[in-house]
Length: 182
Length: 192
Image (cartoon, rainbow over all chains, first blue to last red; front, side, top):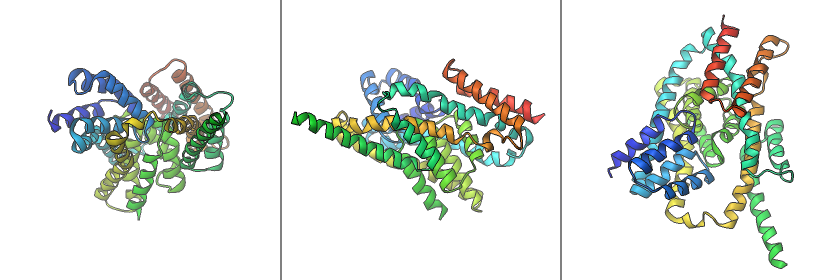
């Protein structure tokens, strides 16, 4: 497999999926597993769960891992570059062009209608996520406190993540030790 | 120095981003809107909407746009703004990329380690709060219209919010379609 092929595959995956990283999964599977047969299905699912667990952008994590497995560091660089190339160029054009059109009354009116919808689109998955993140009555206070700290007090979400990580580590460590004593 | 600040901010956003694009919104909002004033809340909301309709992850899209706009607003030339756009997009990828390389090369076998799972379990719970905060932070008079200046806009906004929320969570209507429809509604309501 040529390094150029790797670039092209990830370029296509990045250029043709609208609506964020998770929308890329079906196309990635089709291109990398079914068409090119660079990795098998089981490996693909493994990489998928790892990419979700790791920090960073999901699609970029996938590209890094798969590129590295196939062609080492050069493969990882090329896959990531291919994956983000089109998105960056499109937003660049948008940013350059939008500065001239922002004050147009119709454009302004469109965005006045869109802004409340954006808030709703972000709020919509919150309740469904409560299930996938295993939120129960016992730990419900954690997301509620996180939201209030960020929204009400203007605390940086960075700290919320860091504290949650440390607390999770300590909680696991202490409960394990208690059980070991018993 | 704007370039250095952009680089640092987006490095930070990249490495503490757990749990997908929506979780990233609160992080980016805090750095870009509240701390550094690179974008207004309206501009930020608009670019989030735009990134839903263009290819690529929200994180990359917002980084590119913020890099460009922040440098331009500092009074630099447009080609410098392009450099800013690439720099911010590079920064948001950099640390997770290096970490992923490290993990793929050496640490694959620790992935199911008990402590790692303890940390991720709690972080995942907190991330739901992060997303809720991102939505709450967008419920402002700038985005919805204020009761004193424009009560009609506020009423329309609340209606749009409710319809979009139900259509998305109950009926799984695609976000792209919803944004297009709401844009058309906005043009009809406020543009004519």
